Image 1 (cartoon, rainbow, N blue to C red):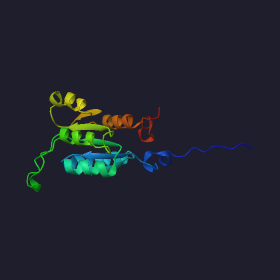
Image 2: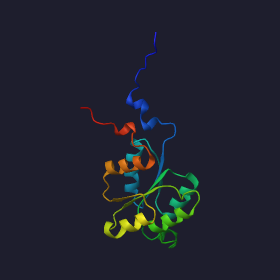
Image 3: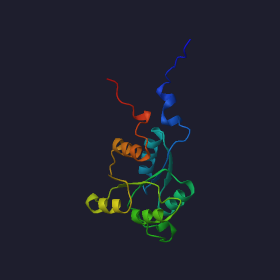
Image 4: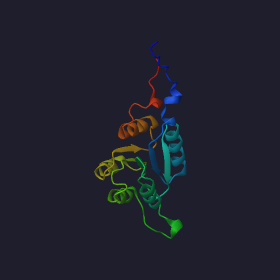
Length: 161
């Protein structure tokens, strides 16, 4: 008698139960943006790391080596630490690109800044994508999947006809 394959339910094959989920570092000074993106990414099967400023972003990227970074470009002065380094997204990208542990991690920029002034500069600095806030989550997820080579993930299953 020939073996019969029983199709697994989609829940058993989704990226949420993947043995090695891709890790994404979300870098934004807004707790609301970090939380909203984290929830969307986790529900799509990704492991999420967060950072609220440049120093945390750089140390997290070095230590955790995420598969992708979502990076805001505008950060307030670091008044909590007596001024410190005036981080912005370009400074963060520069640091990451100089670190052996992070130089090959793709970066997608998410910003409320003026796209006409920022997009070309971001792409020239090494970003692989650029999104204006408010972010279209479906477009962002499609770009993440394409960047990470996850274009066919089950969590983006086509609608039934």
